[in-house]
Image 1 (cartoon, rainbow, N blue to C red):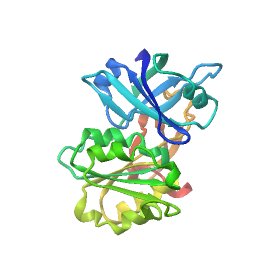
Image 2 (cartoon, helix red, strand yellow):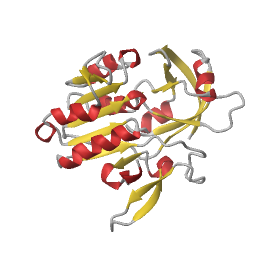
Image 3 (cartoon, rainbow, N blue to C red):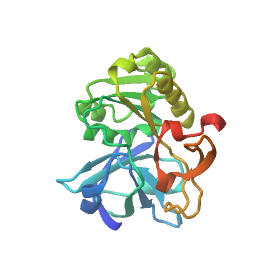
Image 4 (cartoon, rainbow, N blue to C red):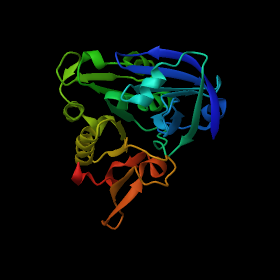
Length: 257
């Protein structure tokens, strides 16, 4: 679905991250947690950039996405103002499975926390969250998660805020087997790998949202293909843009990460 949208709200949420709220009623009506939109960043950028949907309001017809400035496209986005028009496509991909009635733990690292906020919004009072950052200056959206989650566990690599250590270390110290039925993860690949290993050891179902670079975004260029483990144990490939971005952690071939 192609849609010219208006930027209703623009916020700077950390030193290098921004939040856009867009009026996009058709997408807001149908999108699910974990799905992505493709954004035309303008200027002379050729490829659209994929972003996870951060929140959606079906009654107000709005969606929200957040991003970090990492290159030319996101730098152009950061210069846009409220009231300007933005060209987006979406929503695409397979999101997180519905977890109604199940106890959910969300684990996000860095900008990987952004799509998990939509999960929290969709499952209020039935989920907890671990938010992991390098240091306190990178923390963002903590209060947004507290609106929806029973507990928000904050951790930083350097101990400048919350628990000192990595998300998987904190996860190992929680009694996850007794507290949760399923874990949803998004963040750096090494973080997702270690979290998946903890979940597998505890025999808890785990889903990960992969953030591979995408070219066409519709499954044609294979630029976002990654190795998976097939049901018969053999290795194959899937595409993040159309087969994901969310996968069962048991599908991912973590051996090369």
